[in-house]
Amino acid sequence: MPYEYRRMTPEQREAVLRARAAKGYPLHAPPHPFQEKTYYLLTAANYEHRHIMASAGRRTEFQKRALEKFKEFEIEVAGWVFLANHYHTLAYVPVFAKLPLLFNRLHGATSRQWNLEDGQTGRRTVWYKFSDRMIRDEVHYYTTLNYIHYNPVKHGYTKRMGEWEWSSFHWYLEEEGRDWLVEIWKKYPLKNYGEKWDLF
Image (cartoon, rainbow, N blue to C red; front, side, top):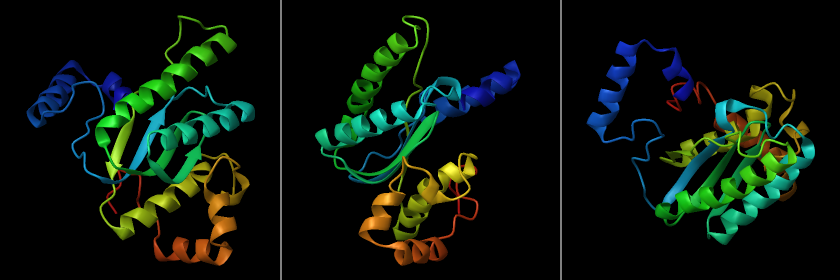
């Protein structure tokens, strides 16, 4: 949304803002229309999709920190992937209202640390606001899990899902086995998942 918005004409921008206001959505931030006790695909990206998490060490450290923060907030994470400029989690959220605080703490701490490490103190925005998609049913759940595991391939980091270290793919491989992963992949194909957004 923020990147498309910049390419719009003033008239197009005005129309988008009117439509968002009519729905009661924030004008310049992801909406959160559903706030139920259920599973969500939660996504957060580095500002302007810059590759701030490009180093393996930083991804490893952030993955550990993020999963610990979700646990601290009593949110069960069922799937995850951490890439160079964004991450996805499939998570059971018992109290949606706690999510803004979770992301503020997680992203606030890492923003300060990474800007210090990169010599960018006070000059760089690190994170954009988080977005969410409420999981509708079992098909949506497992398709989302496949989407998460396929993400490194989709974005050109690897040719195979198992080649990316920062993913729950390896946890499922150990706990459920390769046959289970293959079965889920075949039973719940991605189709056009992720395009406009996850209408499949």
